[in-house]
Image: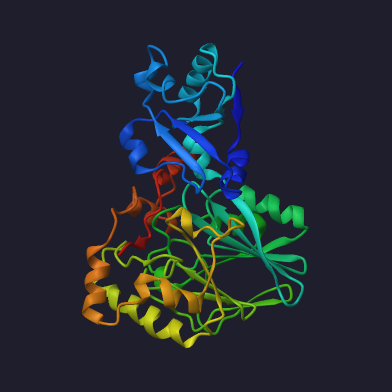
Length: 376
């Protein structure tokens, strides 16, 4: 009987920077596109079909007593490889339950702060996808911001905290993952908020997320201010919480800036992106803590596993904020766009309510890394 490890156990290791050796047995093209990453993670790729006749191709690269976690797409092939390795005398080998499919859906909650009026702010890190979502808890109420489609995770967390989810918010219409905002609001009997300029083609009712329309959770007021902040989408809207935390959506990240092309409008929206980053955000306090909706690099994780940075520090070190010449900025943005996310147009249509794929299809649509950033 082979040993296995859960995504939760693996996530704790990645966050705690524990030395971890992974044998990934997916095809090389899948591996090259997307893999488990971490500061102390070493990954070896050996496709499963190379191991059908025995584990010789990897045996010489590995010690029989070292701990090895075997990973595949869905958990079947890794279990077989794990059993083969055990038969060959490997004593400390585990397969990852559910494979990369399960890894893609794991959310690791992190407490960011206690708020001034007794509330709390939490960040949910989706390590396998680079998505970041948030929950504000205050009194007996909660708001969830940029939630992923795995809504049961937020429901369980709210239940543990003894609070009711009264609001869900999307800072913009997402194109790289399916939002859980509308579903979570329906299940909890709460209100779903979306920027109206991103909602032109939606098929459902929503509360407009607009400047001047603050959202109150328990004793905490979320200021939607200045902070119409277009550039990633035409409706992108930032949130200020407790006068201390700036939720930037996909406009500004710790090591990069948002891409303006996921609705086919790169040339049109790059000017908006510059205006938001170089003017609107500049007017804000340097001491605001930036909490983005995504991260792209393992190095963006803080020592505690969260993703955050002081706004003033980002103006010193984020290369996307260092380009004074407007034409040079336009060139940097439009020439450094990564491949567009898998099925991004179908994801946008799903988030607008124009498509309603089965759960399994939704999982497939999201497979792969997030690609929301410009990498100069």
